[in-house]
Figure 1: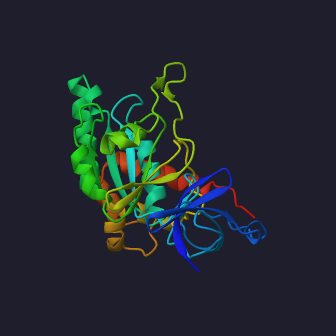
Figure 2: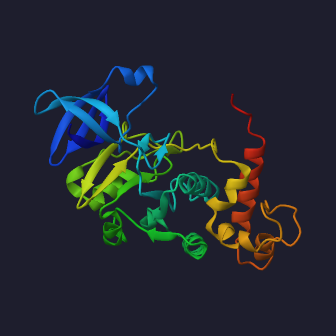
Figure 3: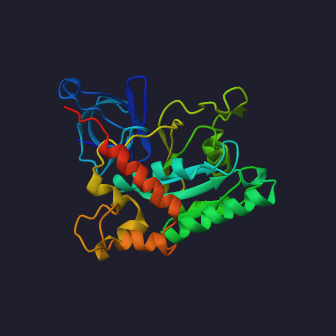
Length: 294
């Protein structure tokens, strides 16, 4: 039977890309009974009814999957955070980074709307944060869809990969995608002055072909929980903590109150930024306080 990749899910239909043709499919009836939900990004086996329609028979094993946005087999996540409107938040960025790292997805940080920076103080702060995250081991790009700053440097990132564009509502994800590929003409909206946050302009997940890669423009969201991440796993989601954990005296060190902790020593020396460590401690408490699910 033929195979393909789901590139869009909408109104109960799955649009499967098989070579250069698209096949509109429904899931087989057993999927609901067996609690199988096909996701955008899934590699699937389908039974063709004609050249344009078919039924998905099998969802092949996934290497990863996200719940919000609902997508699978992601290679990298482009985390878009605006310099202003809405304001840059290291706490929210770190929540996104933990979720991405926990799912084995390569994160890339994209700071958008740099053209709106007017004060020297804000510009210095953004440069400082960019430097901090680069030192921690992340790739960081500063961009503007308005004046095209940094847009050309994003292109090579997408080659032969499935990439997710994700971030808080209103940070300019769709604007960036339009700047990268103008013929997309994705809908964008300004920040809501009443709510102080972006209007949701993306209503479904869809994989968009850009050169040899696929990019998902995803619905904006601003809250994340750490379901599925355990206390012992959290440190691995911070590259600078993961790098030093092996030098701690105790195996399984949580880097809180244990003696001879290499992570705490790095914080004291300024090798790990204090705000990153503070966020780690906050997330650790959140995981510890999480109510068990039965």
